[in-house]
Image 1: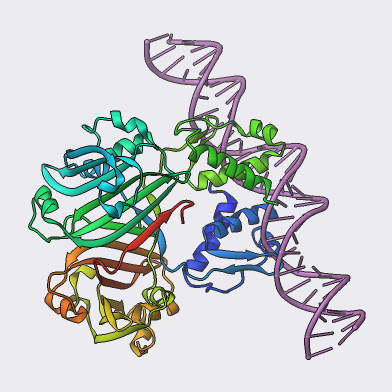
Image 2 (image 1 turned 90 degrees about the vertical axis):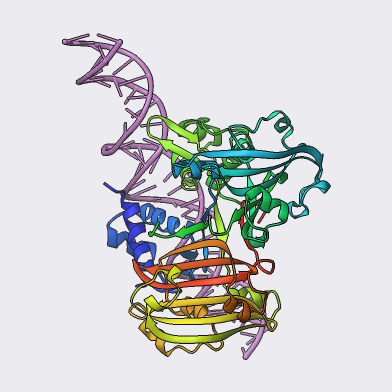
Length: 231
Length: 231
DNA sequence: AGATCTATATTGTCTATACAATAAATGATA
DNA sequence: TATCATTTATTGTATAGACAATATAGATCT
């Protein structure tokens, strides 16, 4: 039932992933694959183009198609929507707003690197009554003026934004840090506890929409990135 | 000079990303796009299939093509090869091996979740003479017997593996932790310093190759993931 | 109203062919 | 030998047409 071009793609893909074809090796030319699979060149081309789009091979006119060097470690990182993830796992999710203020970006955490007038929120993500992540967020009022009217009761500011504002570019920086005393109090942990710090900034067509810094208790939360069939 | 199918793809993509077309909106049918762009259906199909492959739209026979719900936060995470990255930034890279032992996996850090006989290495990544990441790695001897003969002098075990063994599946877990006393000593920092813990496990066709746990000093290292044009 | 069949719109795949673009290989020239 | 032009192999793009698969919408029958 699977389409032929798909079969060809998977066939060659497996030859590469299994190590049977090593980086630098040359693939058969389209004409030969046509013969091998008994199909038209368009079909072969579709299969190999897909591999090229996925970065598994490089193609060059006249030269041929070659197995690409291993993509080192580019992989898909699944940064979940907290509310969604927590509810999935059967826990009760709540967001508690600690602070909400319209102010100039200069006033908020400088690590967010946002400018202009913003809505600044500070809150805590709670799973089954237990604080679980601390969040400080700035949303540009010039980019998203309507957020001023938003109520963050069922939804956290992040969920609200996801539902209302599409983004086109994003950047996420992950590091480790020790919680400050104020954050420790909000999370109900000891001062200086090791935390995962996730700073995420999004744009829409070059215009900065929001920047957020989330602190996850180190042992309670782990980001997992997967690549390949093990998923 | 850009191909027509590429122009069509970008055209529609920008309509989606700009917010002009919202999730759930229906795209014109291929026949209409044919007319709009004055080309054959195959060309339109190629453009829209690319958008579908990228997850921007969903296609259903008879129903049509629809703008997909925002892909939450799936993005490309660039987990660099440490040696490469440090050298890029003009610093001098060195790997110092602290421990090397053939043993059963049971003996090494249980968080690595590997089994059988392994080569266990512990070492420190050094940039410009300053310790910078602590690494504990187990490499399966059944999967990679030849690593027993490897010398980790110019290359760290990770770099050696990258050069010699292709992998097909990988999983990376990122969390925050406080360094143990032994690790603190190796890194030359105070006990309990907050660190980024990166556990990475790779397979080849289902066979577990290696598992590694790297500890990065929290303030000295940040993983950055980017998505979209801002890169 | 509800179930079942039928028609139809839309995407999915494939073919055979054509010409364009590119870079490597080859040959000609200085 | 070095440089430049020419050929040639290979991929890139496009076309028109055909038939398949499938989900919706409409029609028919309980």
